Figure 1 (cartoon, rainbow, N blue to C red):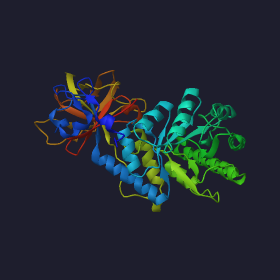
Figure 2: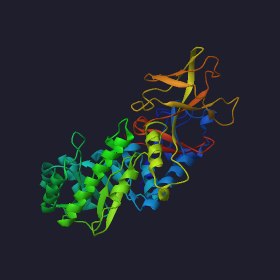
Figure 3: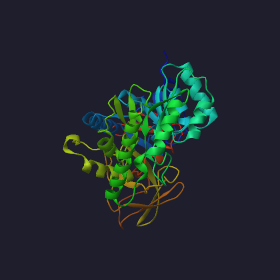
Figure 4: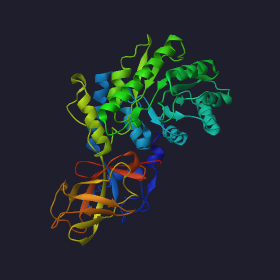
Length: 430
């Protein structure tokens, strides 16, 4: 049987792909890891995005241990990477399924062999509803769940009718002024009753996304999030008391990449007198970052009770490397990477390593005084102390803040080992 990733492995890469060696002939993506290319030898073109293989493995082990200690499951959010090769790694590593945000993302994941999908969004487009209905009818192995937050949404889901299997849904609980979701437990209960009464639908659980609460007051954030999660637990209990759930196992789902410990603390104590699965949806744990999520996860790790503490830590695995192309002034350098290559919505990239072949066998830490202060479309302004030793042609590896808006700038990300030898090419679908 043809492997679901075979079509990706058969993709032909050439010099039109960012990062691909400009002096190499076209090659199958699946053959890239056997070419002996090394970033430090200049075999790749710059700028280039890479994933550190050993760090990916460490981060996966961290999450696996966290789930084991807390008795929870994960359905990682695929929108972070939109890389089916990484989806399969996560599923093989024990993920319950893959979360997606849009119907197009769902189709990508399904096309490349992901069979259990949670659409963490409302499904309202009639064409998308038809696709889900037809795929559920045609493929008994396909498991799909989406969110509802309105009676109108319930009506749209049932309007096409004729499904052989019920469409499973989660009632989404939001907060006033927040993102999608009903605004109260009472509204959620009314909606859950409507789902129970709707032909072709089945209520599988309840859900929220608490990650929208991020201010400069972590203690206040924690209080607001726990209040929200406790309300979600109350909604689940009210639904169970009226026998509204139509699933052997009820899903209680929340958990962005910053507060999943609070999700476990609140939802883990919900007793519905029936099987329950607490389902986290962190998407950034695998790659992590060195800015926005690093700060939030530092707070998360400090909150962990002793029984949940893990000896290792999440570490940034995603780096974007550029080359020094200009040194127009003594305290100034320009790298050939910019807004088209690296996230800048939640902080600028930070020089983490640098490398000069004549001096180093491996990258060395970049001095703390080096600062990227401005990003242009294709340039990064790197401010340096006077007399800094950085020449044209030197390589600078940047740590990023917010992986979600870095991955989407790359068609291909190169996986490297600890000596920066390319071991795999990972294709994205944004």
